Amino acid sequence: MEEELPAAVDIVMKYATYEEFLDSQVTRLDLSYLEDEELARQLVELGYRGSGEVMKREEFLARKAAAEALLLSRRIQAPKLASANKEIIEPLLKELADTEEANRTGKMTSIIFIRDFNSRQQEISGYIDYAHRLKTEDFELYFAGKKKLQPKPSDLSYYNWENQTCCSNNTPNFHLITNHLDGLLFKSKRDRKIIIVNPKDTSHGDNTVRKEIKSDRYIQVVVYRHLTRRKT
Image 1 (cartoon, rainbow, N blue to C red):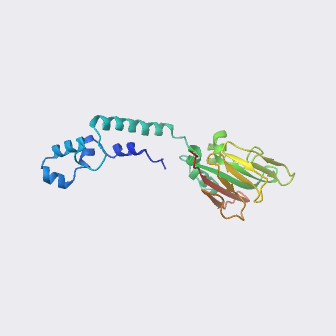
Image 2 (tube, rainbow, N blue to C red; image 1 turned 60 degrees about the vertical axis):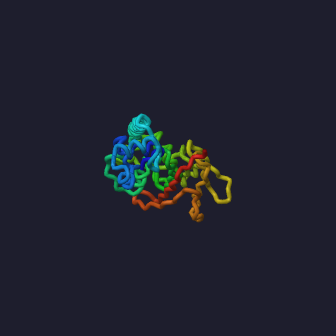
Image 3 (tube, one colour; image 1 turned 90 degrees about the vertical axis):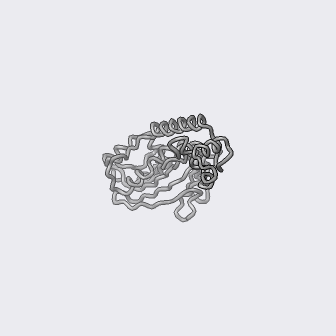
């Protein structure tokens, strides 16, 4: 979903013409007294009638041109989605497709926990920064079913249960906190909120939702959706 437009943009985009904008502030009572539609419009333009914002024709047209340019730039800058025009059935990939745009634009940052077997049939697990992976990998291969998403030693965390290889890293979106009573925590670098991945803690942190995904392709999958609130 697109972000809400600024109020000034929203006002001018509601009306196709300046006359429509003026008419929106003319009441039936005004017309019954004035009996002249054009005169009623002139009084609104001068600020004598109407309860809305006073705006001259030149200002209205300038705002409308700026608003149309803003909307065009947003369409041009909209990220290309790797999941676009693909029939996706596998539950984890459906989740990733549903949240791809939000993760690409920064409205959301998702942490994906996966337990699975690697190509050597060794059990591995780890936490993945989805937004970071989107920027560093071609996800069309995943969405097309040509590649399987698995944890890597370069992800937020990685553990190989057979050889006990353990790795942990900070990413552009999250800072890893390991020395805490609640176990592993992740701190969002965007809004400084804490994401709690301990399954015994039902809060999961502010603006975070935990979603367990059942998939025949994995031992276990859990996704933590974190809605980003930038500090001002």
